[in-house]
Length: 524
Image (cartoon, rainbow, N blue to C red; front, side, top):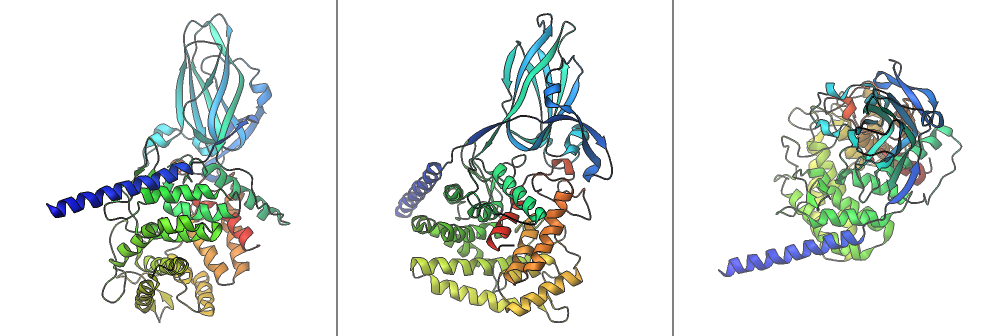
C-alpha cells in the first residue's frame, strides 16, 4: 500500500509537471499574420517531358480578364498565384442570367507543382492516405455570396471547376484571393549577395521557412502539417539567422517536453490539434536532437531559465540512449525504424546513430558546464566509452567507416562521423574528399541529409566544396522551377518518392530551408 501511495504521488507530480510545461508552450503561442494575395493569371497545364514530372504551366490570360468572364456549368480554369502560398481561398460569386434556381457546385484542386493539377488524383496509388491530396467540393445555396473555403491549403496553382449550376444561370467570379497565414515576421538578417543564384537560393530558403511557420514549426504546410523534432532542429537553426522568432522555438521545445512516454522519451513528432498529443513514433536520433536543439536555443537566446527547466528532459534522452550500447560501448544494431537518418532503402543506421550519440553527448556536456549541476563527469565517462568504440566501425582497408553486420559503406555514416568530430581535422577533410571521389552506392536521398553533408564540409573548412553542393543540389531544384524547396529531390531520379507517388510529396518542406542558414552564418 505504501508503494502504491508513493507511485500515485509520484505519478501525480509528473502529470502536474507536464501540465506546467504545456502551459508554458501555450504562453509562447505566436500570432498569425494575414496577407491577401491575388492570382496573377490563368494557365494551361501542358505535358512536356523536358519539365520535372512531365508537366508545365503555360500562361493563358491575366487574372483581371479571367474574373470578368461568365462561366457556365462544365467550365474549368486554373489560376496561378505566382508564388507558393499557404492560406484560405476566398471568392466573391455572382449569378448571371435568371435568379439561381439550384445550388452552385464548385470543385477545387490545389497544387504546389503543375503535376498535381495535371495528373488525376483518382489514379493515385501511393501508401500515404489520399486524403492528403488537396481538393475540395463546395455547394453554395444562395448567390451572390462571398465564400471562404474552411480548410487551409498550400499551393501555387488552383484548378476551379464549375461542376453544376443550372440551365437558367451561369456564375461570375468577381474576385478570387487567398488569405495567406504565417507566424513569420520581418527577416532580421537580410543579406546582400552579388551572386544572383545564391541570392535567389537565400530568398527561396527564407520563403520555405516562413510558409512552414504557423502556430508551430510545421514540417510541411501541405503534408504532414506536424511538429517533427528532426525538422524543428533545422528550422530553428535557420530561424536564428532570419526571423528570430525564438519564442516559437521555445514553444516547440516545451511541447515535446510536455508529452513524453512513460519512460520519459520524447516522441518523434507531436500533434497540436485538437489537443497536444504525441505520435506513437519514437526515433533514436530524433530523441537525441531534443538535446542538441536545446543547446542551439540557449546559444541563440541565453535563456537560462528554459535551459534549467528542460535539462531533465534532455538528460533523460541520453539516459535512455545509453541503455542501447553494449559492454564495449558500441551502439547495438537494431531492425526497423529505430533511427531515421535518411530516406534510403537498405541503409544500415547503426554507425550513423552511434555518431549522432557522440555528437549529442558533446552538446550535453556544454549544457552541464553551464548549469554546474555535477553531471559533467558522467557524460565525459559516457563520451569516452562511445569514442573508444569508434574503432569498431573503421575499415582500414576501405578507409571508410562501415555499419552493420554487412559492413556497409554509406554517405550518411561518413558524414555523421565527421560531424561527431571523431577524426582530426585533416583526416576529416581527407575522408570527405574520398567520399566525393568514390561515391558509395548508399548515397543521399533528401535535403535533410544533404544539409548534414554541407555542414560537414563547412566544419572541415571546405567552404568552396560546400558552395558547390548548394549550387548543384538546391540550385538543381531552382533550375527545375522550385518556388520553395522540396521534401525530396534526387537529381538522377526526378520521380523519387518513398511514399509510392511523387504527387503526395511535399514541395515546401521544413528540412529543406537551411541554405539561408549556411549563406548567412558562414558568409558564403
